[in-house]
Figure 1 (spheres, rainbow, N blue to C red):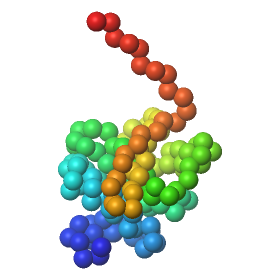
Figure 2 (cartoon, one colour):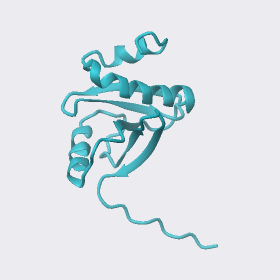
Figure 3 (cartoon, one colour):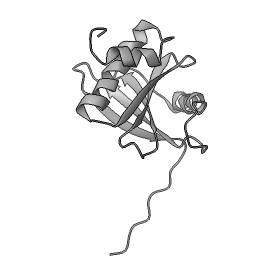
Figure 4 (tube, rainbow, N blue to C red):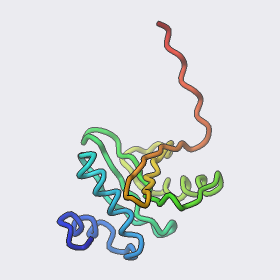
Length: 131
């Protein structure tokens, strides 16, 4: 991992992160940068969660999305998701609005990454458009 050409840039953004949490986040970082070709991806270590989260933009003019790398073996509950939102709302983004959603970047044992958007609270269904 340390020999990858993009690792040095990634590691500079989260120097305080323990080595054990870097591998998973770096794999998701590579998926976004190389496979999905997102325009802007930055890593940030969130000490209270013991995780490196990614602030990512598909296009430069889009608002940054918070990506939370995790393994498929991690368990989540309504309570843990609520804690996740409260901890991540402290991350400063350019928008001053509340954190409405984030993306779980779930990596399987074969390194496939599935992205799953979750919302803070209940979201009403979109109104059906008239044809």
